[in-house]
Image (cartoon, rainbow, N blue to C red; front, side):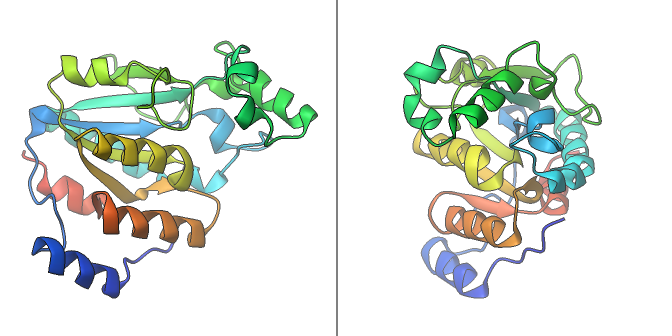
Length: 225
């Protein structure tokens, strides 16, 4: 698992602004959702291009958080990234970032019936949870998903963000959520990316400017019940 500790200079800056190190010290559970981002085979294991094997190490924490959120009366939302064929044209800027043969491998692996699209089998997904398909890094940008309808229908205003990769789809989704007025928190030991330095950069910047960062034990201790 990533070695991460929030730099004390960041903590001091945040405390000077908001008066305390953690913005979210309590949760109104029925208004809280755990957002699990893209923990699909494509992002979890080789030989997929997007594989981030360290993400397998956060699965127990994601499952613990899901159980705690459900017990408290909150909602668990599993995001899955889809790459519809039409998006090779409608998101040509993304396609350009891959060699042609690699772009085809990515799109092939993230069709609805592909193994890469499926959630990692060790995740504790329940029937009462929500499943949302997204088509871009962020679930919140126009045309990416129906996540806002799902959250609105469930009365959600607070998001606990976990998943892979910390500095790509997790951060993109979390930042956009905050800009849309959701109270947003990222979980340091329930998000994963390729390197410790990428993890630290993403979480540090999010903490400074967008929301809160806590670890799994801190979040669970603050949930009611």
